[in-house]
Length: 339
Image 1: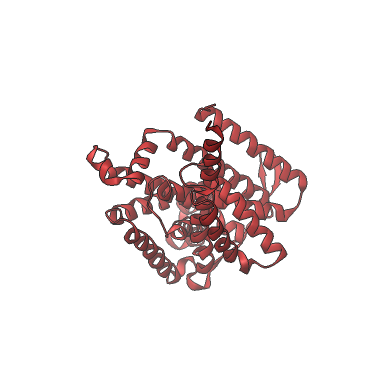
Image 2: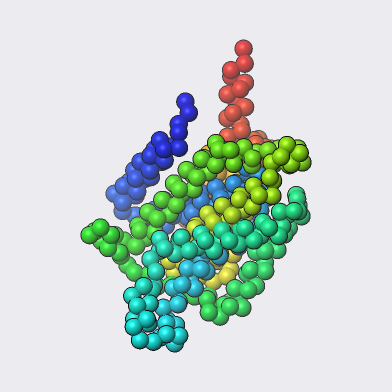
């Protein structure tokens, strides 16, 4: 049974509200921290899959777009301390009333910054293909990290502290700030899944699929491949920036090694590959499976084994299910239907 986008959005929102209600009822802070991380990886994996899975262009620069969203929040957060140095009088008072910006506004701003960066990266690199494109995206992350390390305004190599409040007033109700961030990331995860599903079933998604299957044939058939790929890099970058924007408030202390962490680049690739790259369901399944395993290992063993878990699961799924869990299930269904 096919479900249209409106019904799917409603279903995901109801499921998200149930998850939020359960987490609020359970009242364990670590549950919010761990669930926030898993939801964050759902957004990152879904964003990566729009370019890497739908179009077939492997992006190693996921951490760069995530960090752009995070450091755009830091830059705007610290702007409040510079208002009196740059402005005076009533305009300075007005700016003090506006800054610091709320986290939802920072998410929008992070999406804009990372989306523009994604468009720029695509314009410069999408004429490359295969490993050449992948290396170019990795170079983008290295260059951006070097710039951030030397940018004193956002803390440079020392990092920057973001002191978050203990609670926030929302609709007359006092909400713990960690629950607030969890709710925002839950909404972002819902939005990214709805967007990915809508793209997959649209004319744009069919254009992505033709590029993935045979780009030369797509060009010969009149598909504007460069324009379609630029749309993919822009959307993918914007979603990654949205995932990174609340991160400074979640972690409390942001430094280049945490924003550009290897786990963001590796997990954003591994999760769609484990779940399956040709459908919006794959990144969701992979993020829940791999993210839950990592969070359990962090508590029971050590966070240092997270990348080991990624490597072992990737090797296992490349052998057992090279097309991911979704591809494995689809293969079983086709075999079951054969007479």
